[in-house]
Length: 292
Image 1 (tube, one colour):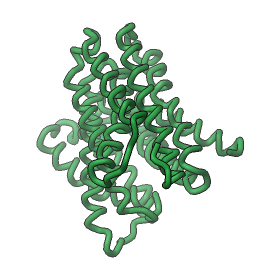
Image 2 (image 1 turned 90 degrees about the horizontal axis):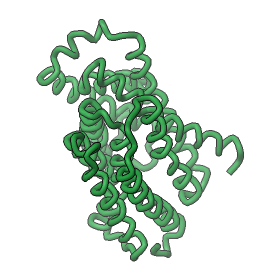
Image 3 (image 1 turned 180 degrees about the horizontal axis):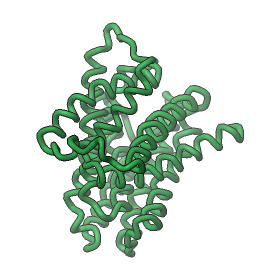
Image 4 (image 1 turned 60 degrees about the vertical axis):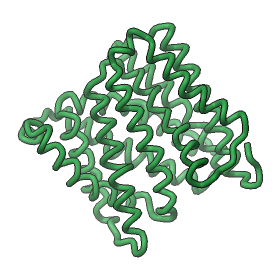
């Protein structure tokens, strides 16, 4: 990988890691459902020129928009609104990786061997260890919402396979177009006060929303798609592993989240499992005849 491309993926790691700050501040000020609605409004405004009808794929587009857009983002925003220990959410969110592998085995009959089976167990065991930490136990609702969001993300990953070859900006345009009315309607029911004060939101809140929409969603995912077109999965995927570690450091520095020994142990176990799955799955995709 060339130095500029390596710098790009490290920049994406930083963008995604710092997004926890953007999401937390945005949902605290605007309300979770209002914040994620506005985030997708910004995405739609930016991606609208790339919106195209996709013959034969519109059913997949609609389902993907509901699951990978409105449901995933909505659950994630609610979890951030309810949590004070963002570090725990940053690690728990990594369960999307083992969930994706489990779904691939169930739906596509993908064969896996002992290393990845062990890694799945480690991933969930690490979160369980953290869950018994008194500092995390009181965040249980937020943690479970993050688990649900991670599962939605994993289901969305499978659905995205039906959209292979569709430009990233077109995909995000449709995700936003499907998600905005669903999220806005939900916000009207459960969070009417948030929508009513959109015009009074602080400039900094709009900045955080813009960060999540443009940098995290479009630059981050668009950049990753661009890199995957140029390098093997086994080269690119492992370079995203620093993201949750950086997220934890940022959460500690910005929010003053406590880091207990039990959380460290659970986090290490979970991230070790995620790392094994990421590395072995990347090798399998680049070597279809193998079964790591």
